[in-house]
Image: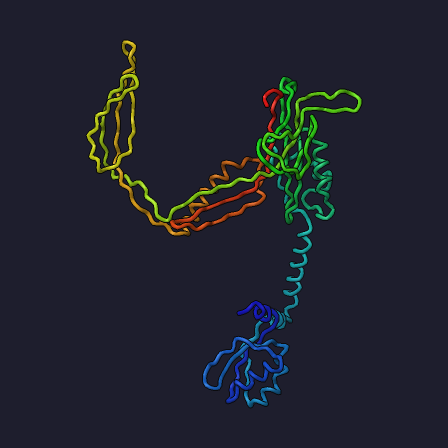
Length: 390
C-alpha cells in the first residue's frame, strides 16, 4: 500500500463489494470522474472489491445505476469511524482528551535533573542552587536561561571552573568541570596550558593567564591555549602559572580489516616437555618434536651465577595445536567490528568526555570488509607545560 493510501485509511476508508456484469465499466467511470479507488480485487466472475474514501462514497450512486451493479459495504476503517462508534462514551473521550492535554502541558516543564562531572562538589549543593534560580524539577522550560543558570552556579561554587547546561526534552543536563587543585609550590611554577591534541575549541576560560584563542578556533597539538602571562596597561607583563578550562572536539578514527575466511588455533590437548641449558647469552635446547605439528611454547627459567658465569636451566612446555579455517558472514563481521570499536571507545573516553558525532562506514573488500568508525569527542584538550620544557 502506498503512503497516500495509508493516510486515507487513517482518515476514513470504506471497503465495498460490487456485483454485476459491468463492474469493469463502473471502475472506469469512477476513475474518469476523479474518484479514486484502490486495492481492487477480483473475487469471482462479476464480483470485485475495492476501497474508497468515505467522502466519495455518496457520489458513486449514479455511476452504480449506469453500470447496473449492486454494491455492498464490507468494512469501515479510520479514525472517523472509531470516534463515531464510541460517540456515546463521552467519559472515555473526555479522559483521552484530558490525558493528551496533560501530556502536552507536562512536556513544557523540567521533570528530571542529571548532574555529571562533579567529584568534589556535592550534588546537593548544585541542586540547592538550581532551586534558588528557579531551574529545578517542575520549572517551566521557557523561563530558564541556560547561560544565567550556568553563571549563577559558577559564581556560587569556587571549585566550579565551567558549567554546562543543556535541556533535552524534560531533562536538564548539568555538566561540571572542576578546577584543578594545585599546591602552593605548583602555583609558583611558571608555564602555559598547551593543546595536547589537534582540536576545535568549544570552551576556553582562563582563571590565571591570558586565553589566546576563542571558541570555534582550530588548534594544532602544541599550540598555547592559555599563556601564563597577565598583561596590564600600566604594569609590565607578569609571568604566572597558567590555569583554566580548555575543552574542544577531537576526531578519532578506528579502522580494521576483517576477513570472511580466517584461521584460528585449536588445541589438540597434547603437550610435550623439553629442557635446555643457557650459558651467558647462548642457549642449547633439546628438541624432539615432529616438524609436521605446530606448538605454542611456554618457558620457565631457573638462573644462577657460578664463577662469574650466568648459567640457566630452561624448561619448555610445547602445546600442540591445529589451524582451523572459519568462514564468517558479512553480518557476523559487522558485529565483530562493533564489539572491537566499542572497546576502542572505552579506551579513549574519560568521565568528562562527550561523544558529539559518530559515523560508521562499512567498505566491502575482495575477501571481507573494512570496518571504519569516525567519532568526534568533546574533552579536555589542554595540559600544563612549564616554561623551559617546550
